[in-house]
Length: 181
Image 1 (cartoon, rainbow, N blue to C red):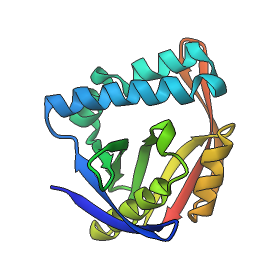
Image 2: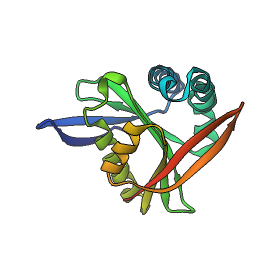
Image 3: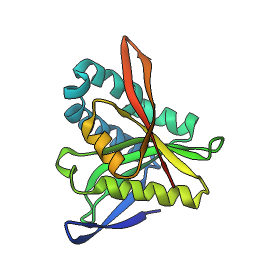
Image 4: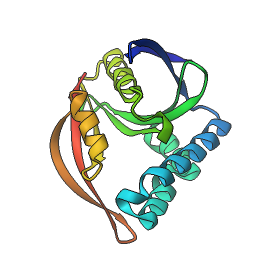
């Protein structure tokens, strides 16, 4: 199933499709895309060693399969109107809190600044409403100024700051941000 959203970008109406990751081949393509995006963006913020570790723990093929099988994660490729995959997103529903946890919103370097994040957030607003969830939330590295500004601009509010020991001597220093659906 293809989800669609339309958004105005620089005065032009754009179509974006959210293509679910379903097959083993999809999972492999997702892991490859994640590796590319992470190794381009994150070393400048968290260093190469932590980037490698986090890709292995949270973005690798094994991690994707584990999260889908054990934690009910859903993933989607973000595909532009020309059919090019420009990024990916994913997360999972939390029925106990009536919220959706957005675990991942990542775009290729050349696709940032083109309003895809706005379309992804709108996708989650519609997803939450269709599932009768009252809010969505995510974590964002507090040194990721681009991400923090983006989410604040999309109506998210910071609800807490957390440090999470992820093992191997690494810590994630994040803001937890929430938006009502």
